[in-house]
Every structure is written in structure tokens, then in C-alpha cells.
Picture 1 (cartoon, protein in one colour):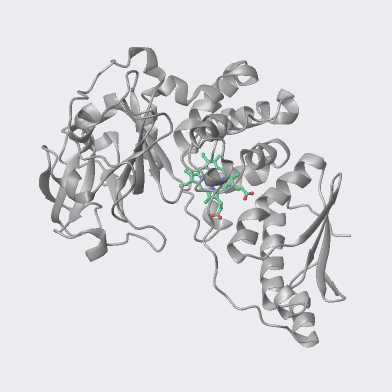
Picture 2 (cartoon, rainbow, N blue to C red):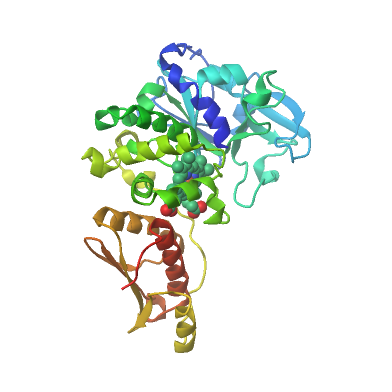
Length: 428
Ligand code: HEC
């Protein structure tokens, strides 16, 4: 997935050259101010004639009535059967959209918080499409899933292997740009990426400069940058990556090369093709932008917050809750569990461990890394930090403040994350 975006990002360097293409805003699309169907496609990004921060919506039916729709017969991925795909070229859609002046790219936002930026140039050249009907069916009537976790719904943006003679070789065939698109926003690249280049971020060394490009091309869809720019499928704060790159380079390299070694079913793609030079630049970039080096905190997601009317809660990742019952454990079961949890002990109905990190920043990075698992399990440890020490206590309210299956399951996750964020951790 990142490869398509990589290709898109290659156009970033040419900001100044991007043509000020102005699509006609005369269109009379049946845009609505609130969604009318569950799978409406949302439009955002200061649309012309629409109050700032407001969105507009189109139904699948309305999208399929836009001129330019066509039926192609091909497998959306090499491994998929060739079926009739009813697609709307993005260019045809944008022509009808009230894009504000200065728009030189669009951003696709997906329900898994993946973000893809497609410059208008790229759209003109490679003709990516929005999939409306798969074999005549809506997602509700059954669209395929191409992996365990991802579906194509509600909207899917891809580039046809037949759309452009130059396509082959530019983007690996069948490469998917965005699988679960829910929103399209009009953006201006320079404005959009400003937090990456403003203030202290504007004075990086030439090597870090290279690293920034690599980060933008390969990581930013899933790892948010400063100011909340980019996707956040990873649900890992930038500070965690900066901290790994600074204090834990060996793990950083291994994780980036082969993430599956650490998270067997991770969405993060392997980067085994990265050279020494690539790693050097990427690591320099993350080190130089570490708040402890810049002396300023990473800017808050201000632009997005402003768009969301100052309400940050809608920008936070939404974690899917795991539905599991908390079951009280017997003392024997607790003893058994402790044999697999080095450094953990059970005292007065609390499962606990004290972790010692290198310094305060690493202690906080470690705590941040726990958030997704705690939220998914809806289980929240008692955490006490004193400088570089993090003491964690787990107990289950549901079983009268005793130790349950949930405490053990979360302890196992915390232990795994502790190894990842700082393999040398010693228990006290
Ligand atoms: C397709 C999305 C995606 C892309 C692209 C991606 N990552 Fe990740 N990354 C993830 C996810 C998801 C995780 C969390 C592991 C998990 O739970 O699967 C992660 C975790 C990490 C971690 C470990 C953080 C921790 O938990 O301690 C590092 C380091 C990292 N990514 C670096 C990178 C770098 C550098 C790039 C670009 C070269 C990159 N990632 C590209 C999705 C992605």
C-alpha cells in the first residue's frame, strides 16, 4: 500500500510546479449537509460555498449518476477474479466537486485512520478510480475482503492496470491506494504538510531532510507526523518512533525491516529493501526532531483541531473493543500465569510490576504505547510514574477487585510492549 503512496509522494517535491488546475465548480451535485445513508461518501476541506469545517455528503447512487462512470472487467488484485467493476474515475468526480481555489491534491481518509494523499497531477496522469459496485453489488450485498482485517468498503480507490500504458512498473500491479475510504478532502500540499517544515522542523540537517522525505513516502499514511498530519493506523505516537530511533536503534531497524517478527499479524509492511543510507537518513530525521533535541514539543494537531471546532476527542483513534468476559482466577491459576510473566507478582488481588526505563521521556513513551491495548480491552491499569520508573498494577473491578483473565491477558501485552520499546528492561 505504501508503494502507491510513495509514488504519489514523489510529486511532492514539485509543489512549485503543480499546475493550478481548477476544476469546474459549476456542478449541481446532490450534496447533503448530513449523511442520508450509512455508506455516504463525505467531502471535507473548505469546499467552495460551504462554511469552514462543514462537510458534505453524497450517496452511492448519486455518485453513480455522475458522468464518466464506466465498467471495467479485471481483478482488483492479481489474486482476485476478473469481474465487472463499476468505477467512477476520481478525475470525473473532482470535476464536479466544488474544490476551493489552491487545491492541488486530495486526501483520502479511511475508517482505519489510513490517509493517502493524491496530487491532482497524479490523478490526471494515472486515472485512479473509486469503486462503486463490485460485480454489480454494493458492499452491503457482499464485497470481498482481501485479508483478515481489511475490507474494501465502503469505498475503495485503486488504479487500473489497464488505465495507463505507463502504469506497469510505476506502481506494482494491483497496488491498492486506499481500501476503506470514508472521506475525501481537498487540500493544498504546502499548507497540509506545513507542520513538517515549520519552526524548529524547518532547520534540519541535509541528512534529516532526506529522512523526512522517506518518512513522508513510507510511514506517514499510518504514523502521524507533527500537527497530527498523516494517518494513524499504527496508533503509535510519533514520540515512540523518535524514542526508538534515538535510544533503541537496533530494535527500530529490526522492526522496520521485518515487523512481522514482532507483531505476527501487523498491518505494517516490511521494508527489507531499505538500504543503510535509507535507515541512516530516517533515523537522523527522527532523532533530530525528538522533542528533547528540538527543545520544543511536537506541535499539537492544531489544524485538524481547528477543523474539528477545537474538539480533539473526535481526532483520537477509536479502538474496537474486544468483547471478552472477565473471569476470576484461582490462586493456582495465578501462580501458573506468573511463571510466564517475569518480574510480575500478585499481591492483595493486584498483579503488579515495576518497569525502569532510561529516562522520563522513555517512561512516558512506554506508557503511551500501552494505550491501544488498554482501550481495546477496556481495561485500565493503575500507573504510577516517578521520573524513569513506571509501576503498573492490574486488578478487575468486575470480580470484586481480584485478579481475572483480563489482568493476565493485559499483563502479557504490557510485557510484550515493554520488550519492544526497551528490550533491556530489568524488573525490580
Ligand atoms: C500500513 C501502515 C503502516 C506503515 C506504512 C508503517 N507502519 Fe509502523 N506500525 C504500524 C502499526 C499498525 C504498528 C503497531 C504494531 C501493531 O500493533 O501491528 C506499527 C509500529 C511501528 C513501530 C513500533 C512501535 C512500538 O510499538 O514500539 C515502529 C518503530 C514503526 N512502526 C516504524 C515505522 C516506520 C519507520 C515506517 C516507515 C518506514 C512505518 N512504521 C510504516 C503500521 C504501519
